[in-house]
Image (cartoon, rainbow, N blue to C red; front, side, top):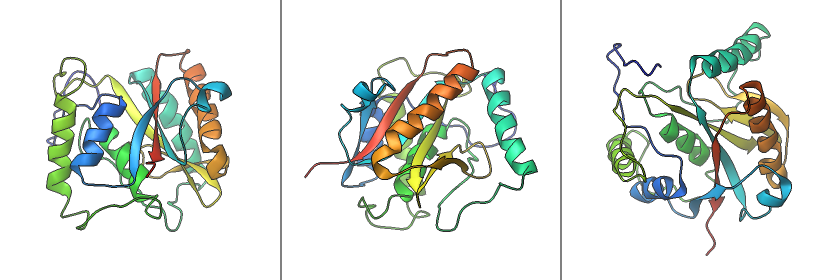
Length: 218
């Protein structure tokens, strides 16, 4: 992915904005229930305490550049060399084949790996493909800023989830989720925030933002 444009023939979607309104429109468009997206105002413990729970996932958005791509790719290539490139049993992971769809895939991974906590609605994933594309386009075009050109890639989304006592990083540009160490549902945001802060530091304290996927209060 580069901001210069795409020439590989793969579908191109309009990038999503990283705000709760856009993601909640997407969730509602898919008719997924018992879940919503809220903003995370900072990674310090006192700010994380304002995020309503239960917490299902943290979605992290950071500027996309050759530097950030190379930094993340190095981490994953090292895991491949160590033989730690397998998708854990029971985990749903899908590699992104659509340009500018990383926001959608971060949400998809957040939802499909929390089926016991949400209502995914009716129909199979294949049946939902068209509605996913329509929901993506609708919420991408309803953002707070001007809709960017479809070939313009400025940000990348990744998701952090608790699964089986582990903190997993879901980056749809890669081939497998990264195991970031132990965690618990109650420590998910705190442990995921540490990963986000490390990435920010490695990339030069870049500006970024984060969202939480949480169970909706009845």
